[in-house]
Length: 214
Image 1 (spheres, helix red, strand yellow):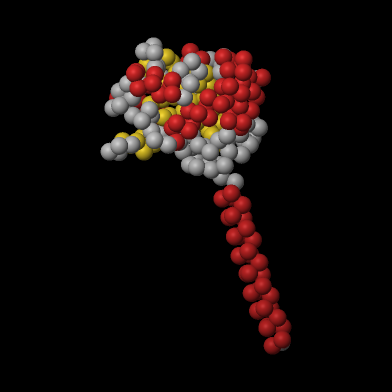
Image 2 (tube, helix red, strand yellow; image 1 turned 120 degrees about the vertical axis):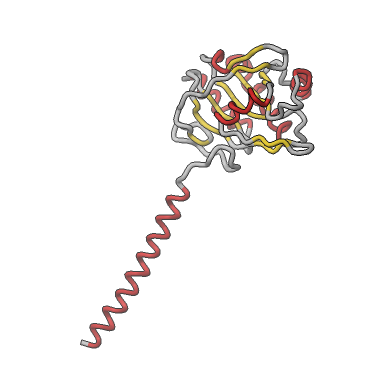
């Protein structure tokens, strides 16, 4: 009887240990399956739709209207029928924004004749300093003046757009701390994927070619 009790006790300990291991494994699996939140830095893996980036579920992209680098009024909704790349930058950014602009220029070159079938929009995160002249100068420096619309506005007009796209923008003394990455919107005006700031031109080009075929 004493032997049976000891055996039962050992079996209970082993069973408990196995349950703990199973629970930890399940928690780790669930955590790894949670998609990245827009604005977080991470790897742009293929989404359920086959596009590179975080799947956004195809929800309608919030519309807005602002002024571009040529002083013209531009609305997101006017580009229905084209895939749209939407990003948030500022012209005096010392590092990431110029890099993003250069990568977007590479994408437009890679698309060749199809570049005219795609819309690229950059919304300012620095209303205090991003003027029409600054937007045009920044666009020219990165050879994007004929490829994108760099949109500017007051804090009152830009803030609702930042909120609609979960963009953090906080001016510092010399810089602006803001969210990085970009949204890829399909020809119907629906948000398809969010691409973290580590996206490559090849990944974005592939996404746009896929959307052009839809």
